Length: 183
Image: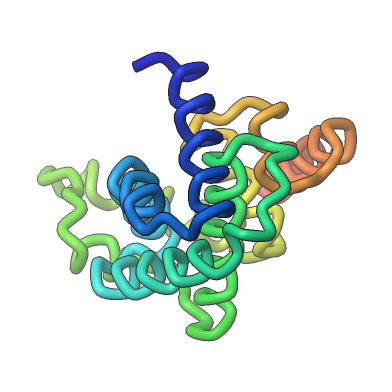
């Protein structure tokens, strides 16, 4: 299915739900995007249970907010914005910190060789420390751009931020990270 076809299908399902509260339309949207929402939650929260809880909360929010969805952006962008905001709010509540122990506890494989492991530990700790100095909003923007692979237009639609403001925030964050890496 092409992206344009999905957007058109999404629009039809959203309109049907808004007009008649058609449960089947919502279920089709849920089926189409549930894995994506869960993966996004997992990429932010790093814990399966937390990601499942956040995803469930997101779908409840979507269900109740869908009648007010204006359709100015694609449904998928609107859903991603809700997902991102929910995950950021969850992190704020939990005050979660990414650590190397958390990575290995979650099943992320680290190199076996002692020398490579020492280098990976050093690099991971340095990156984690540098990222911890950025705001949650900027970290989310960097994740969307460099981990999730979204372009500036897509991030703009998701966040509601203007493209020039978005580019400036990402540019400043990269400059800040570069400056800190030389300290």
